[in-house]
Image (cartoon, rainbow, N blue to C red; front, top):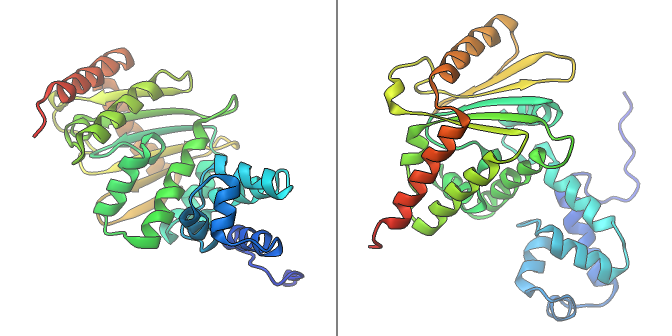
Length: 280
């Protein structure tokens, strides 16, 4: 295959291209960051980070820049491409992320944390920070993770079932207010028609996924793949016999998990406990 011809000389990587376009538009108009901030209404430090690739910003600020520069839809489109770009994820996740975006249904089991699709911004940051990320890489991975939540939005969103070990709901964040927000978010997500949330209580005792987070993806061609992950290793599994074994284990867990209605009540009780605990 012939190498793609690069005409503009600008970055072919979505995140880099977005940052370059932001800087180009500002410089062409002879604006300083401070002048742009005054005209558009956001802090100059945010625009600096966006132009340096440290953050993508949000849809509101990008839309405001499109309007200010008279480029309707251009920056929002580049922002969406940067947000969805699988190369921003670590190498072992990239193939999985591509398949996840194509899935028509997803099933998840979580050992100690809710899946990224159900995490708040604050929870995602805390979890990635605990994993050793910091600085620019931390900011990029947080944005990449919260950007995945769009997968569950819209009328054509895939169906998603998540079974959470009770340990997930017992492992609180350091900031109690942020932990309440995460629990509230789980309750809100459980009310969506395409989302089913269940809790596996400690009383369920031993099972085959005691130390493994698992995600199943059902693809358009009816194939199913699985992604299994523990503290030190993640693996994308496509071999039918292995996927089937994991599916049987998952089904056994689902059979002993609380019903969706009882799971919602369980999370609400956890929320009440956090709210009622005295501050320290």
